[in-house]
Image (cartoon, rainbow, N blue to C red; front, side, top):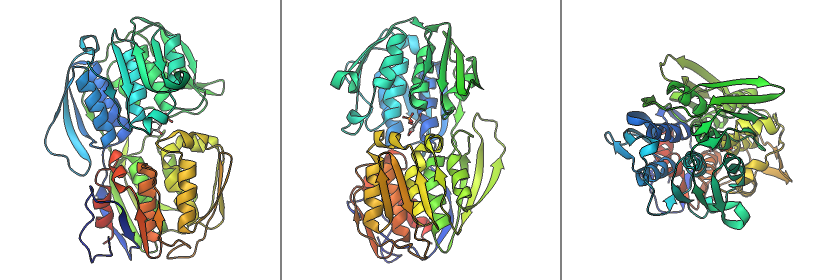
Length: 457
Ligand code: S3P
C-alpha cells in the first residue's frame, strides 16, 4: 500500500500487507459492532424462546463463530441485509434453551475464546453432550478457569492436557447447584460463563471479582427479565443473580466497538496532523478505561454522549493530534483495558517519558502471547521496550513525525490486535511497514484496512 499511489488495500488482501506513513489523518468512521456485546446478544437471543433482533452487530470472524455454534445447536440466525463496515443486522429464532438439539459434530469456536467460554457456561446447564474446539490459537488458551466453577455447579467437563486446554467436553446437567465463585483472575468470560450456567441453577449465584470486568452480560440479562444485582463489598465487585430464571426475547442495538476505536484514538493522538471522528462508540464504564488512560497520557479526545434507549451508553469521539506523555499502569488498569494494551503500548512508544505496565500476565493468555508480540514488533520498529516477567517498560521517543520508528517486516502472530496495532504503527513509522498476516484483523474488524485507507486522506 502506498500513500495514495496504489488503490485501497482490500480487506482480504494477500500477505504481507504494506503500510506507509500517512501525511495526514482525517475522517469519520463507523466502527464494527462491539464484539463482546454481539456475542452476548446472540447467545441470549438463542437462550430465549422466540425472535430477537441484533442490530449493528459485529460481522467479525469471532462473532460468526458464535453464530455457527448456535446454528449447530438448532438456532436459526438470519442476516437482515448485507454487512456494512463490519456491522450486520441479524434475526435470531430459537426454540429456547430447553429446545436446543444435541450437535452431531464438534462445535467450532474458531479463534474465539468468548464463544468457547460463554457457551461452555450455557451448555453446562443443558442436557446436551458437546465438544467445543477451535483453531490452533484457541487450543492454547486456558479453560481450567471455567472447568473448576462449572464442575462445582454439577456439570461434567473435561479438556486436553489435564483439563487445561481445548478441546473441551461438556456434559450438562439441570438443575445445577448455585455457587459463590471468586474469580482467580479478573475475567468477564469466566464471570459470564458462571452467570449463564446460573440460569439453570437453584438459588443465588454469586461471582466476586477483584476488579469489575465488562458488565455486558449483567446488563443484558437484566434487560431480558433476569434479576442481577452488582455492588462492591469487602473490597470485591460482587455480582449476584437469581438462578433458574427465564431469559426473554429482546432486541439489542450494538454500539461501535471501543476496542476497535482504540486503534484510531492512538493513531489520531500520535500523528502530527490528525483529526478523526468515531461515531456511536460504546462507552460503557467497564470498557472505557482506554479513553481515560489515553486522556491521562494527554490525548485530546472530545466525547459527545448520545441519547439511547438501549442497554449500553454510546458517544461520538473526536481525537486530534496531541503531545503524549508516559503513565503508570497497574494490574487493575490492565484488567480494565485488557484488549487495548497493545494499542496503548504503541501510544507509550510515542510519548515523552517511560511508561510502566505492571502485572500484565493475562496478556500472555490471549490470541497470542501479547507481551512477546508487542515487545518483538515494537522493538523491530525501533521502539525501546523492556520486558521483566509480566511487566513492560516502554521508553517513548516523542520526536515527530516518526517517533524513532522505521518500517520493517513485523510478525503479527496471527493475532488481530497485534496486526492492527502494527498497521497503525505503519501510519507513523518512516518508510514501509510489512505485516505478515493482516487477514487476522477480520477476527474483530473486517473493514479495518478499508478504514485505514479512508483516514489516510
Ligand atoms: C471478553 C473478555 C476478555 C477480553 C476478550 C473479550 C468478553 O477476556 O480479553 O477479548 O467478551 O468477555 P477475559 O475474560 O479472558 O479477560
